[in-house]
Image (cartoon, rainbow, N blue to C red; front, side, top):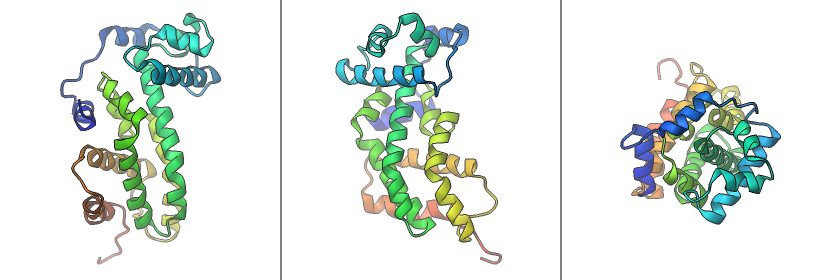
Length: 226
């Protein structure tokens, strides 16, 4: 299945099935470790190494526990289900991609340049990153779309860290609309980027045109009478 179709399934719920066992584990397990804990980070790093070595489909929770150097029971107290391991790996990789994009935003001279340059870099990375593509194509739950559209709290944190300075500078410069919160801006930004990522037929020039004509106006501060 192509990345475009996989994303379509995740965003719109077409053909996506929820694993009842995973959902039961999510409901009944007592997860005693915070997502940002050292044990959580160790487990996710171990899972990513296993995914690269064995493939996502063939990696078991036992594999992850052994790679992380922790007992299986400890792993389940840290991360309740295999699906959560995959989602954690997606978030981890998204954070790394955000760190790679941040210098582009820092060098941008104005809001428009930052939004277009950052969005083009994001969609390019989402389409071409082998690890992220593999994780998304393997995902089997409609909850994954919340990670990729920034509506998950942890995903939103990643995007807010990436874009907050851009928004702050733009507000001070009078470029950014004043009637929207950072969270609302992130929700719109990530949704448009997801839509464009699904358009594998788009050439860079056409994608830039669409961003400049339809995407930018949603962010620009409209002066009275404009």
